[in-house]
Image (cartoon, rainbow, N blue to C red; front, side):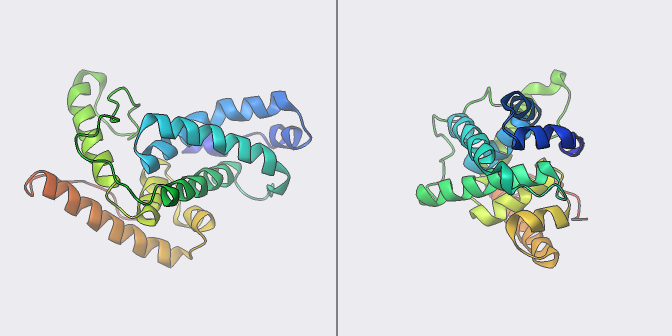
Length: 200
């Protein structure tokens, strides 16, 4: 997630002072990672688009609370993550079924090391397998996986978002990987493997 760490401080300061053009630049810079997080958390394109829009509305309203000493990307993803958790609680953890018509094959591919476009059909299949398995995880475990593996945040950055200490985050990541792997194996009779690197 290197692009999240290149935000010019003066751009954020300008937005905090009410410069709408500066905030529009922030939206343009961060709309993809915010959408990606929301899609992984919520499981479908329409909800993710709504969540991304709400995230930016909330971020704009809360800009004055942003601490310049903190990574702006981490702060913004924190707003997005907590909104998604709230939304999941409101929907009372109604997981999507495997054949849910809301699955949208045009949803963007979000794993950074997916195969090249020549293997897009296989990539899409793998993408949907992982997304379905993610939806079976409790939201707090899903969130740490998404922040770690799809937003490439460190344990310390995830800790700032979740409010857990780094040790707790590491334990949650370990358990979340186990649960995700179990769901993937169950879907394919024990033959599917998910290769995730160990938490840093």
